[in-house]
Image 1 (cartoon, one colour):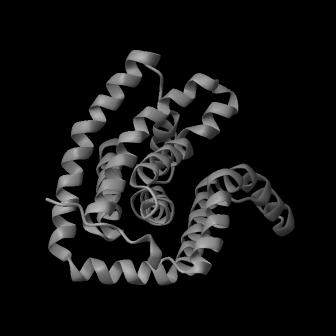
Image 2 (image 1 turned 90 degrees about the horizontal axis):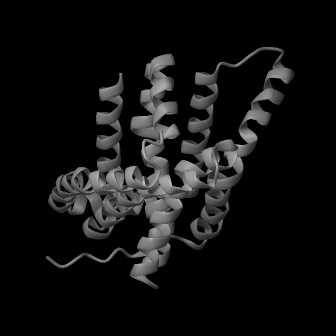
Length: 236
């Protein structure tokens, strides 16, 4: 079956510019400064904020900014979702099969390269679920998938797709993988930790394909939500 081409052109000029700034901040800046920001808020208010509350506030803000900046894009991709519901749902099912089938290969490959290197992102999420299950489930299952799909598939992949399909797939997958490992790699775990990016390349590829095939962002969002939900259920 032919792949339905995604039109990145329905990003408005404002979404392209503001979205690019927001993407850069989300990927590289905000993770570094949030501890300092919350420490300043605590001093200002004369109180302490729990780790779970900090994470919730952070993702509420990021979610709100995503809605504000990409309001037009989200509306149009939602119209496409309702206009082609059957294709979206079939893509969701195929995406889940591809995700779990291909992802095993990535884990086996990284195991060969790094042995039993622990995925610290998974460890961190598991600990957060045990510490504050409701807050973490909201973030992991709903807020983070929505934000990441808008940015990595909607913005990055959608912006590049009309120029080069190969570049769109490669760059969106690499940046998505980079997001999940770079803080741990530069935080004292060594440059070899970047090899764990391999574990996120397959998910990034599958999610980009879902967007590409369905023609709307809700297909990868549903896959992302389902995968994260099943993982959270397994570790809870």
